[in-house]
Image 1 (cartoon, rainbow, N blue to C red):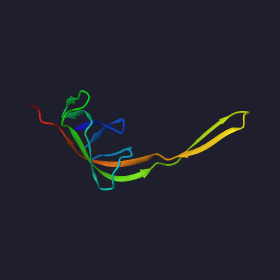
Image 2: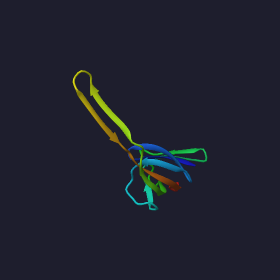
Image 3: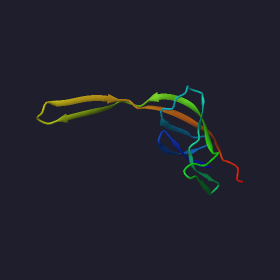
Image 4: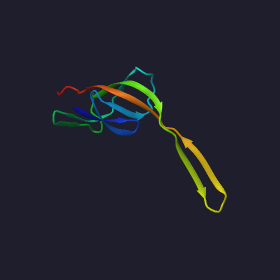
Length: 107
């Protein structure tokens, strides 16, 4: 079983017991997190889709790590104009262990 979840403005496919690396989520290491914006769930071949989200569905996970990516260098220049700008950037991320995908009961 897997689900498509909206996390930090991006859609990600998640499965129980797998790790995901997302945009930074507020919270401490070891805390539980819930993602309520579930777009679709594939359960044993049956696809459940939302409009846009599935009411009552959620994905439960645990924060394993808060960190930052390796530094990238941003360099801008304009030839013959003596214009040069150099900057670095490190993107923050959160590593999450997906513990459960909760499917709402059919009525």
